[in-house]
Length: 264
Image 1 (tube, rainbow, N blue to C red):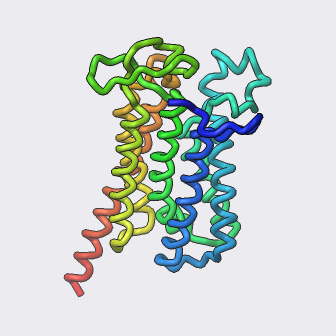
Image 2: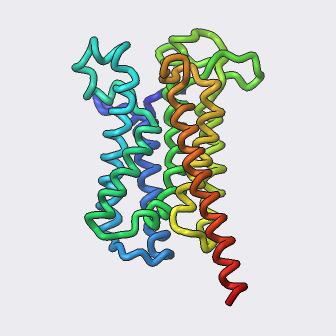
């Protein structure tokens, strides 16, 4: 377990960065196919533009989210570190919010239906998160609390996990989330072929990830806190409630349409 895959002189290829690159490339390939299947009015160049801006927006908001939560304890004392993203500090919930906002702005400019594009993108987001968690595992960050369970992992010194809990087996929460995000991806990938109302796949993604992160956060050692509460669990609860509201409204919409067909 080591964060660096290859080092040639001063050039390093790190697992974390590599996983993001792989996630973006694989997601781009699958998104192109999904856009064609859904017959969205988007060219191939548009897809490249969209992915570029979503990645930028996601990273920007992921950083802002993290800095806000850590402002009092760290960044108010070291403001020069705010822009040093290479030192770590990206929060996935901020990235999701930023990605959705960037998508909304992009669809307004390109005059594309927002919910249709988010439905096409949501499965790839779940897959990209799975790749990213493997990068966290190799980095030894986004780590878990000590455990006596047989699958607990002792992280080496020099990693955030190993330095905080030297010699102690920890919950491999990155692998928990990796596996659960893969399950979420396959669920969304299967659901996408059914004739759902626009926004349903996005709602299912938010429901899935909200539940996943709420559960996994109980075992995280590096949670961002809001008073006595984990920030990730608060935002995850918002995701779940919002998604359930949409899904329940969707079920009512189906029932109303079925009644209208029977009347006809």
